[in-house]
Length: 459
Image (cartoon, rainbow, N blue to C red; front, top):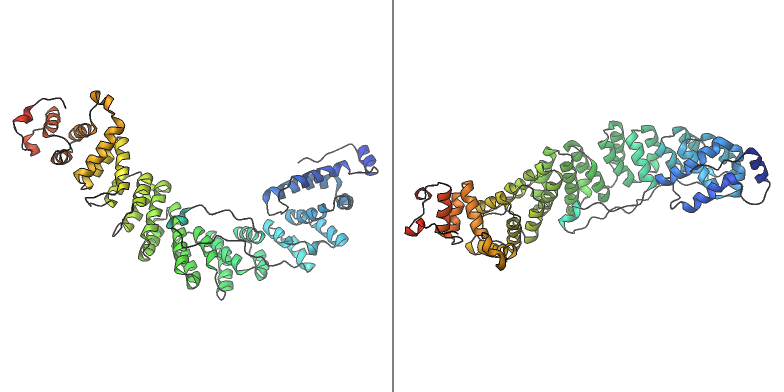
């Protein structure tokens, strides 16, 4: 926001008139617009900084006293502005004239977050005391469905300690971090360890491991740490620290979010390792949901996870529906469905969708790998026939069973043609008709062809 700039004469006149000086009006206007007063909200820090910086460039610190008198809330703004932007001159002025600095909460965090070590030194010299933080409503993991681990993390309000800790760790600022550490709650130190491992700041990792070795670990902080850290070696460090304090529920959650992160990063070795760990914990359903999610994020990794899940896997109707809706490669999916002769309503519905879309290659896979009963196939065909070929339009269209038989013959899937005939889905005469059109010897097809097979009846 641009500061109102008026001619010098108007400045002199308005200073001696009742009411607010024109140069101060933008501060009052901004106060009404800000939804957050915390400098740890970037939009707030930017808005106040954009207002103060040009104003101070024009008027300097000499006019601050009148500003604070006219608009008392700007004293707090100026204090945080000085810490956030590294303006030691303003901070010294406010401390000398108003003794306000020591009373401003989270001022040291503001300077630390922005990397202004000279401000931190000044605050320590005047015995500024930074209050300890309190963890801000972390996500609570429950024994809910396995799908919970693959939903977006809900929004949490910004926490000054968390923001500062992450920024300091990201910069690898060891000196600032060691100043913060004595007042840092274990929760933030635990989160910081995960970040330090991510950014490979070895000195910070060593300091944190030493600091945390005798402290109880909060399993809730583990979830966020495991979701971010990469590499098996780093994950094993976290497991060593947290495992003694984690219930089986949290161990499953930690491995799940770490596995999801490994999939995103295409870390194949870590994916295999964590998948086997979850398999050993009998979390087949969880792994299956992960495989479904993987199909949309990293399709090449989905078969690796499914290969681990597949043994002794029992698919429910809901799983089949989700698998089919997520799958892009039926050649990996179909073997999972097994070879049982009976199929569920969910699988029948999925087969009907494939049939409706005329996904011929997928239909071939299904019919080749699934030993389906004739009644199941006929039911799906009848359903499709009613949908795609109503009674009034049947005269000029091939029934879906005849259409598929012709396709199987043309593509050389004679075993499927034989299956259709043996199930009485199509007649032998129809099959022979298409075999002759394709110039395939009927005798080699191993059908007991009688005299009727010579018929040229139009199917």
